[in-house]
Image (cartoon, rainbow, N blue to C red; front, side):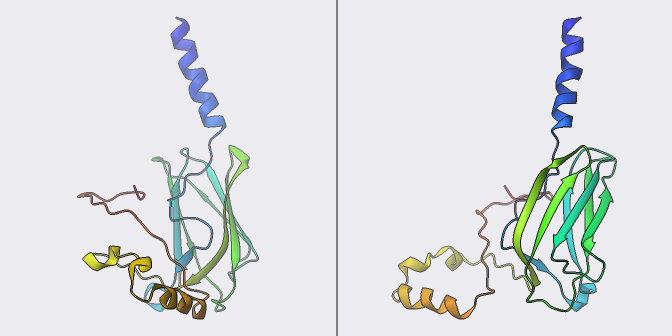
Length: 167
């Protein structure tokens, strides 16, 4: 009988501390893909408790639609929003994400921009570290000419099914 009371209590405590889960690529210095092919919009997705209200706050607002977007998670706990940036792609902004069940627990990404995103994979030489190049110091110095260029490295992996997140 005691076990029947403890399990629901533990589950309710876990849900009370819930915070939206965003993919690992969501973070400081990220670039959100935007181009005319997709209507110049970007997408953010995540997971939370079913029927949770998720709030995205932007500072400063990168969009003509204001500084706050809300959405409600689906029955499976997933959510997504579309962002429509202003035409100023040089603007940096911060994104703060919170859920209605615990609005004080925040997920924050700082120094975010809209722009072009290039995924590179499949080449064996892509794992070659820059520090092993003959002219590593000179090559690294050229990065100063590209202040908006950002890197995101993912460990090698594969899957035969779609994944919510990186491993």
